Length: 120
Image (cartoon, rainbow, N blue to C red; front, side, top):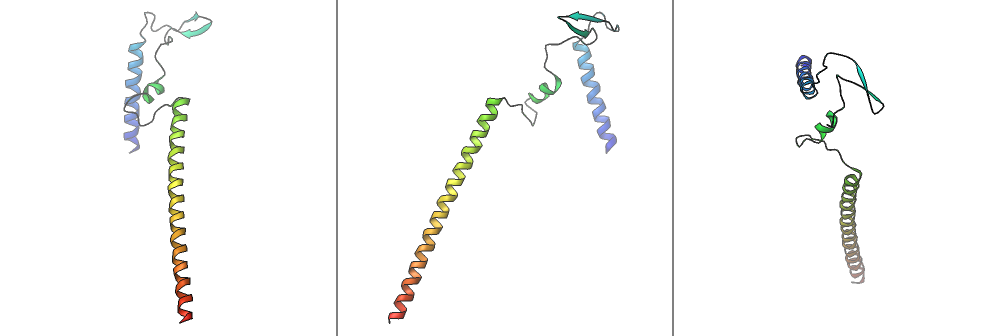
């Protein structure tokens, strides 16, 4: 089982590495010199790219089971959950009040029966 996971992981890594290497081809490939670009030391082998990091691309994929949320999206999500929770609490409170009324009616009927049974 672990060998299958290792095999799949290695091939995924190789595919992503090959994709990265083809997207960042430079004429100086193979040299390991550094250049100064806006006071940042970057390797010619790994130039800065305009693409977001791999984890952001994976999370923004429509097939990803997880989603990156902005602060406003998270706030909206929490407000919706709070609203659903408050509605559920209100429904339960109404059910409790209905049960209390039924209990009070049953108790009143029982008291009326007891007091009516004692008088005859």
